[in-house]
Image (tube, rainbow over all chains, first blue to last red; front, side):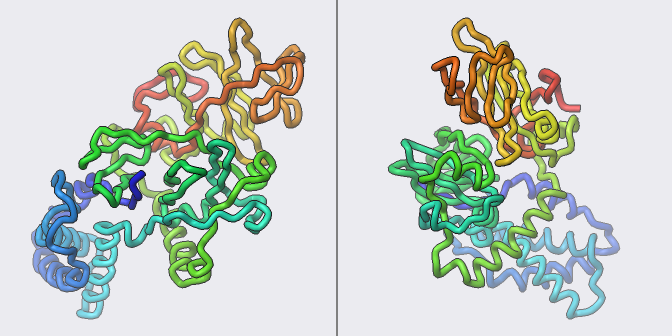
Length: 169
Length: 218
């Protein structure tokens, strides 16, 4: 089976775009936030060519379109929710928003899927009795994936016996 | 949640295993009947089980700390308070983050709130005309469901300590459904999806909520 990563739902964009309808009086602050947010996004620009051909989902848009939407979202959100009063606050806000947008655009860099973890026998695992696990048995081979390591990653690509499996939280 | 595979870039729906877009659109991953349980309960049933562990290099690293202490906690805090947008109107019969055990039998879906299961431990129910039993094992914090009719026999199950027995006390099974005495018929397991209500209701529109049958969004 193909190995997998996380991906954001495109419907979140609909909510972000709502915030574009800001008060006209805040356009100046929105513009300033857009510049600051755009500058902070520059280190995170994706490669210009999409990795694979396919439907025009958001993450496959050209880099400049991604930046445009992200900056607009950052600016609108900043102007509506937070009102920075100094340059330092603007930079801090832009950096925070940029990191958040980066996590949104590239969740597989935050929720990093775990590939083929080591399987320890039950007697050596050292797992507490109350630990929550996601467990499966295939062809007399049983394995448990502790939620403690599954939840931060959401995805574990693994193999149970000869069967490729994906533990998805 | 959506999943992307590295080989083709196709997008897969986590809840259903269906490929929504990309070269593999329309393909379906096989959903396994895995179990969410406490380690002690699983180990008791499967003493030879393996456990997935962190690689030694990663286990103590700052990345592991970041993921387990920060990312996991932020996720748990945020996702328990925020409802992501779905395609259907909100079904408000239950709070969106109420834990439910979801079962689909004979075309009928029903959600059993964990709070109800924790107080009742065993529910005899009927879905789509098919008699089922839902058992909550408090020691292992896990939910199992079984068919309770085979051939002409339909059993009303009762919990007897760590065993399942019929009302007449003539047949006995363990909590995995394996026959102990009075019968050679093992109870057939039904896949149980343990999710938040918002997830179950999104992908099973019109689902019933125990003890009620199907219903629309509120």
